[in-house]
Figure (spheres, rainbow, N blue to C red):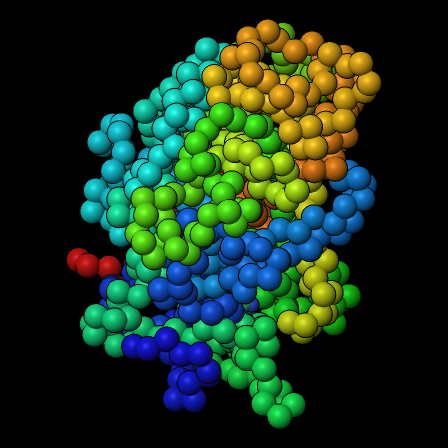
Length: 606
Ligand SMILES: Cc1cc2nc3c(=O)[nH]c(=O)nc-3n(C[C@H](O)[C@H](O)[C@H](O)COP(=O)(O)OP(=O)(O)OC[C@H]3O[C@@H](n4cnc5c(N)ncnc54)[C@H](O)[C@@H]3O)c2cc1C
């Protein structure tokens, strides 16, 4: 079937509606369609069709998708926060067919075994989810065969290029500091080491987003006549009958793409669902769809002038993200070993793609790690509250990293002197901070109220993790032979005379001595984090799978409490965070959700 851009008048009723054609949504629709080609399914996606868009298919062009002018992302602006030096952080998420999988940085990272187990939900333990992790992937990396898949739609590989010089040096430096290289840090059990990072990119250099790997092939193969997709169309709300059964949705053309003709606004349309409505609009989008439908906290709904259908106070609560900051360093690398030439337009990325240059399949990120302090003294140095948090949540859980740390071969900003750079990127694995996202009115056009919550945890544990990570990543990069100095503009403003002051130009080989940090230096780092911490684009947890009395929104079969026929499938449902970049968890949720729905609809093969 073709992908529609305008409302197809002939589609008035289908069996299943999937609201949101993102990472989990595309998988759910595709697997349902495989289970029964007669089942009519309609995917309604707010963003544009991504089919063969160069900036999506070609990894080298990926950064353009989060430029402020990008039409492939949604930009969620949070409230001003005094934890963040009065900043209003902006969190981009996927806003195109394929969702986050179409615009993400393509880094392959799996959650830890203890993460899924911490969800404490029947059917969702790591052992129970492993078959779905294997089903979705064709793995080209090293590691134990039993924990990976070799026939799935998503290729995981090194792609066409690695910046091996930088990668070798940083892996060696990390190992010297107590974090050894692990060939497969994504096997659920390994931790506290580094890996040569694999990507959601095929060996021939094409992004593995869910639309290209699941949806488009089925829309084109002639065997899925009842799989329909409408893009550039926003779901406003779910419609219920008198028994609170979901029976359809209201949706409209997205004005960001389709201008009203002659000033006449397109009417809001409805489409009916005979069997099921699945909301899959992501951790930022799904709460709004539920609340506009009357499902949520009655106080929020009353204030927004939405009649209450189901009293589910957990909707939009407990927003989480991994907090990230980049620290730039000058390095002695060749011009084709970083992305700096491309970011500053000294190199023509589009031409490299057209010429099928080996860099075209690269994202400039070859190093990943999951790390914990190896020295108990470092924990005590962060204070008694940090020690208590460590003892409670980490000490006896060796599977849990304290921080994740990657390296991008580039300076991701403007105005730096012409040079080659790498940026070290520490991000929090399990933040204690929580935020929220809610509607303020009944319409898609009403502003939402988004509190990102970063660094708002009671004892500032999250910022202390960043303080620790700042020192570690700096120590790591200084030990490499490629280190040529710190770009001071991207580092804390250490007080005059500080022994921790940045070295802007360095030629003398690896620096092995520890930097002594004073209390004032620590304050400078903390302040820098408040001024600079940002999203890792890993929004999660706003409609938890948990008991209703614990502010849960869905049960283990993804039913929304207080309703029937209404399901969720996306990263709004994890009740606890994962020590990993989140795409894999969204893919797994898509596969697992599809399996649940196929069984419930009686479509499972005998
Ligand atoms: C810039 C960026 C970089 C990232 N890098 C990585 C990485 O390298 N590795 C990794 O593992 N993870 C990464 N992630 C995270 C990962 O991609 C996401 O966590 C994951 O894709 C989320 O999947 P989801 O199904 O929950 O939601 P999404 O994939 O966001 O899907 C939600 C979909 O719903 C649509 N939608 C929203 N509201 C409406 C509405 N009202 N009506 C209709 N449609 C609607 C959206 O357009 C979107 O397509 C990154 C994410 C981003 C944004």
